[in-house]
Amino acid sequence: MIYWMHPQGCSQRRRKLTVRRPPDYISNLPDGIIEEIIQRLPIKDSVRTSVLSTKWKNRWMTIPNLIFDEHCMRQSSRKVLTDKFAGIIDQVLVQHTGRIDKFKLSVYYLKAEYACSYIDHWIDVLSKKRIQDLSIEIDKGCVFVVTDSLFSCKNLRILKLRQVLIRHLPAAFNGFKHLKDLYLDYVIIHCEDDFYSLLASKCPLLEKLTMKDMGKAPFVVQVPPTLKYLHLIGMFTNMRIENAEFLTVFVIRVSTRTRSLYEYLSIGFIPVKLPTMLIYLKEIFLVMDIGNINDLASAFCLFRSAPNLERVRIGEWFSTPTSMEYADLFWHIQKKFLYRFNKLKFLRLEQLSCWTSEVLLIDYMMRYSPHLEELIIEVKETVNTQGFLWFKHIVGRYRSPRTRVVVKVVKVHDRFEKGLS
Image (tube, rainbow, N blue to C red):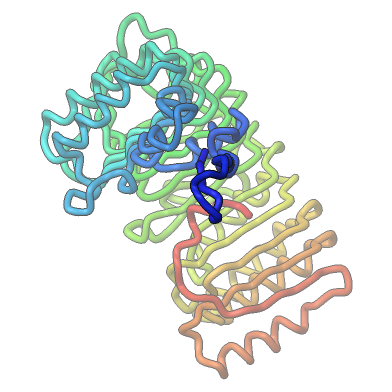
């Protein structure tokens, strides 16, 4: 409120002017919108919102999702779990008063072994908060040794572990009864128990399993009946998959260090079909060398074992030209064991080099896919213009009124994490 004098003199009565402040839109936002804004901010910025107004003060203490990654670290120590950063996480967990549904720790480097004690303490706190989505992702440095605290998180629905060591399973562990999604990346397992058998028996709701670079130790994956999505990435030199008939999505992304799918699917010979038919499998993603006869034979072994495939994606991230003699022999054999893709609707081929072997594969799949609706072909940018135009002309011969065909040049980059699109 402001008082002012009449310009004609002081004898005039003072008049009152009321200055209205603009509405406080920030304080008057609905609670749901405030929570949504705070949740979308990095944790360090969420804490800072307390200074905006009384209504915003300490609202961050009840957000259900806590994500600690490079976005909430100092630039000088980015991606390194330092004492100071660990102390901040401690403080956040101590002050947090609500439920915690999701907790993610993603650091590039675990600086020292003492950092493991921090992580173990956090998991213990989270288990009491009935955590549902837990991610511990470490790229380099010390391996985090899993203790009993992890197995006390009985409400987990999603669990993602990277660079951890599992030495044993607690005697009292009865399984993750609610777990639906499990991601294991460079997880070292030294259990005397059959870890993968326990997964099948003690995770009754498991639907998605991703395993990456699990090492050279032999192991058997017993697929539980509930599992629909199996994703294998990297190098597996001694692995057997059992009870895979209920899978609906199967993704194999082999390491460039192990060039052939042949090593994964057979010892000594490649069967025409797998012993068990994958009748529920509708989508498959293979990373292979189309110019490698063993890779092709292994792929067709999978195709024949999955009669209900609707979507096929093949990534050729390493390729070699094939002699026409071997190529002709392979496709002659395929005619003997003729397989029709009667349910196939979508086919995507990535990072092709415009080899003749690739043309032969396209010819076969177009010829024997009566219901194919879309074919997308992506050619490497390193292919010269003349080679691309020749390839595009040849592929054009197989066009069909029922099939949309797209041929394009794309940059070489990693599409793997996108999965089947």
